[in-house]
Amino acid sequence: MQTVSQNACFGGVQGVYAHTSAATGCDMTFGLFLPAEARSARVPVLWYLSGLTCTHENSMVKAGAQAWAAKAGIALAFPDTSPRGEGVADDEAFDLGQGAGFYLNATQTPWAPHFRMWDYVTEDLPGLLFSEFALDRERQGITGHSMGGHGALTIAMTLPERFRSVSAFSPICNPTASDWGRKQLSAYLGADEAAWAAHDASLLMGERGFDGPVLIDTGTQDQFIDLLKPETLAHAIAARRQRAEFRMQPGYDHSYFFVSTFMQDHVGFHAEALQR
Amino acid sequence: MQTVSQNACFGGVQGVYAHTSAATGCDMTFGLFLPAEARSARVPVLWYLSGLTCTHENSMVKAGAQAWAAKAGIALAFPDTSPRGEGVADDEAFDLGQGAGFYLNATQTPWAPHFRMWDYVTEDLPGLLFSEFALDRERQGITGHSMGGHGALTIAMTLPERFRSVSAFSPICNPTASDWGRKQLSAYLGADEAAWAAHDASLLMGERGFDGPVLIDTGTQDQFIDLLKPETLAHAIAARRQRAEFRMQPGYDHSYFFVSTFMQDHVGFHAEALQR
Image (cartoon, rainbow over all chains, first blue to last red; front, side, top):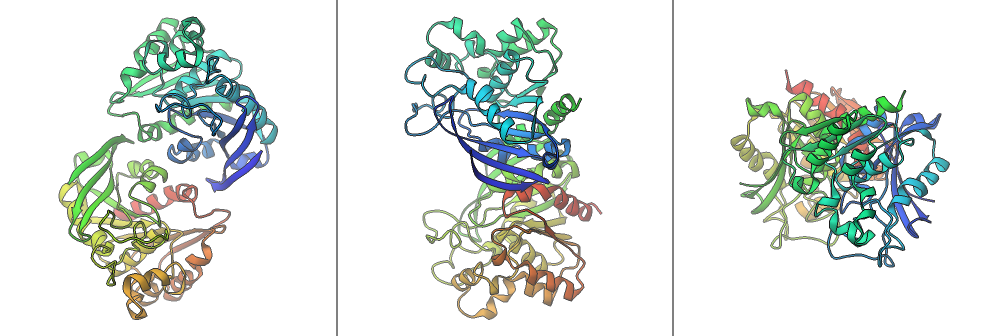
């Protein structure tokens, strides 16, 4: 692992690190905020998965999360959204290939060898983080924005013992029935839709739910709301009687101005679950 | 004036607008955050001047200022740092020309026709803002980062009745005696150093000071600290017996991670002065 940068930030350190990932078979870069408390003890960690076109950097510099994480004494992990590099497949569209990993393990050509973001985020990067930094494996929460909200919800429901809490900002809620999903799931996983269900938050909510608190925020003026399909997830939450807070925030859109506005709520929500 | 974008943000609106400036003779873009209170009354405004290479956008998306401005009910104005466009002179160096206006009126070729950022920030843009938005001309504060800290301090001391409070993050404090200053002042104002003194915060502090509270933050690990020369401003503040808080923040560097860390303090400092 290589240190790219470290900046003092809200009494702690905002670091950027690079490493070679066995999961994706390429170099990966991630951000990690450690609060002051991490100097003397292992601290809880909140994972933040980013959306389409983002790298590890967008949320790290635009969401204002460090202010609230520092107050709560929790770390923030910011993974990249896909494998990258010259030897890695890509597509001209912004919503496929590099920057658009969709947090799954691709099985199809040309994506299969590198696009293994599920393994990267759930195995490879956690292995590194808990070995190299003062993070408490027993106290993890996960959140994300848009494609990253999809990742947070699907990962949390599939690995229910790992995360105490899950939240999402304007998540892609029902990709098996949306143009933000069907295109990518067929490209990465093939035409057999049976393989897609494991990566649809609304279907997972209907089948398994989550054994902990859930918080979802979506803006009523989100310009992509027809692709996100929050109504499907809301229905599944209510039908399952899932403990959850599902909020439609009046006037907000899909931007980081929306994310930053409600970041204090989300960090506070996870901090409450993580500090028990 | 043309609306480029408007995003709901912390209960208010983060807008970006473009207009043709008489001062700079070209199209200019600026950001303006209006808190919810601006829907029903004129609100105080805090000007934020940005540093080298920045546009109106950097601080607007990276400093986290809207969170605190919304709580305090004050607006934030984010001007650009220079004139821009194909007909506008530029230099290959990042610290001269476009993105590096230094908040002065250039008198020298090729800069003179467009590089009139002093007039833009003190006359042209205020004229537009107070005419188009619900801002209270009687309650203004000013801050900035690096070159923008230089701009905030020099403008506030030159127009003392306009601003109730002034602060700065890692300001260029003594440009007449620094490589961040002598190069630009000679290019924009010519070889006669007598014309430079009006744009040196330390000299202005020694000659006039500021009739109100002053807050300055600089990181002890600032990678540009030898160019900033905070020691000269600190000396001038103390020698003048200026009401001020001058802080060296241990471990922090020149980045927006530093700016965002102390933004709550700065907005709170101005809010106290503006709400009287």
